[in-house]
Length: 69
Image 1 (cartoon, rainbow, N blue to C red):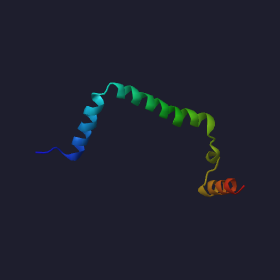
Image 2 (image 1 turned 180 degrees about the horizontal axis):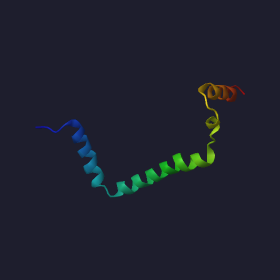
Image 3 (image 1 turned 90 degrees about the vertical axis):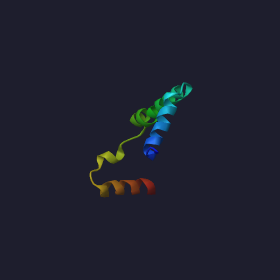
Image 4 (image 1 turned 135 degrees about the vertical axis):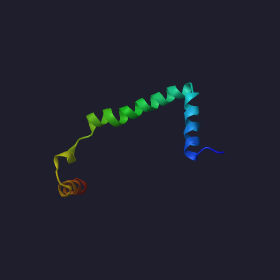
């Protein structure tokens, strides 16, 4: 009898990642790069301009003003 599809997919990836040697290092590098891109850069370079507005109407008005200037 066949195992359910979801379980077969899970086992496929689980066994593949478990037997990797170089791949684990590459995945670690990828995850570190993603962390830097999405968390560290966001803290230093992206402003929270829309956070000061409380209603969606104020936010949309601000965006329209920025786009049309």
